[in-house]
Length: 502
Image (cartoon, rainbow, N blue to C red; front, side, top):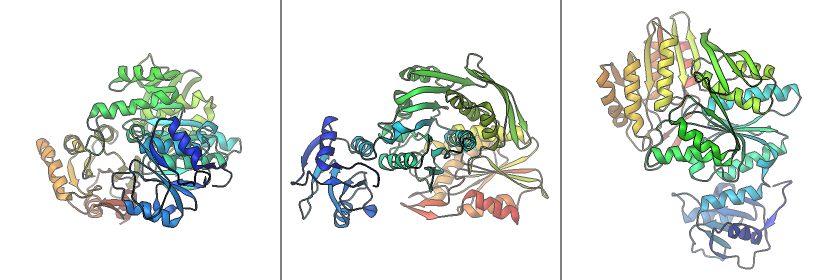
């Protein structure tokens, strides 16, 4: 990597040993060779790379390929029998080791950025993009590089935008993005922080200047995610231990436990739509056109704000962004303009067929909390409209969603079309039939249309006047996981616009 100081393999061994992670090592007289790259992807090997063996699906052939491509050593939790002498470092925990290696290799770039972490069950992406929009306004006025972002939609390092595959990248990619952002002159980096990232050490070594806790609701409970709600919740709370200023929503479940955990931070700032004890309090929340408006009062704030995104629940996300912006002393004019312009692709995107009076909403809502807020808000904001819902749930994980989403859709929708949403190795029909059991309790009519493009087509083309079509679950994503592969697939945005134009 250009402009980075390089260190020997022996140096990295000592670094891991200092954290009491090393079980065994043999450097085969190559301890003085300098590590020129680190990676766990055998397809991206560069000369004199240190290869990281990680993941339940890891195979020895990946290591062998990396050695053929130029890797001269490896770090692993297991020793491999190779045909040649390849230096190795065997560690107790590969994920902890990976964060330590990445931090050193990329010269601790987090220390050269204003780092903002966004956590919670729902709203991370929207809040992150509100924050980026505010900071972009502020930095543009000073003729400085735009705010960086790591989100479930994409990453931006001040120069390049790349599609994201995880809410929070693995440690090596994460530190690489931070390094590129520093190199490109970025001052602020906003990132979504997932429970998986906290549980599996992806963000080890980071200290967030501001960490936001938006909300908490039961989600991601499965054998491959979190074993129960306690594990999920406590993984979320870990962010406070590496946060300077915590920003907490007072209107959430388990707020007392969240505030207690937030004491691990140096300072705590609160916001609310209803609790007058909050540092920042919203008022007069209302629908305005296709967006919303509200007042906010707090330290240095006594203003009216407008949002272009629909969904009254987005005011909570905007309040979090206001509180964060004020901790950095961002002038109000940039907060107001940033919120008004702020949008997140595939989040509460609205499309209209004025001739037929059909409105379509595309949203990434995919869990209990996001579904409840989406449907209840749309019911309130579009009175008199017939609601048609199109959604599914993923295969192999988050099994509770099948009951939760089925009940919520059954409660609010007038008609439901169940379809594919990342089925993985499960049958779409089996997943849909399981969801349907809970819809039937509400006597809401439904049908199963396996192919997602056909489900969206049917919902839109067969809609009558004053119909609101809610397409939930995938938003901006342009792939579908079938088996263990991600196949190219039109995004919900593309499908909705295609059939509305017909």
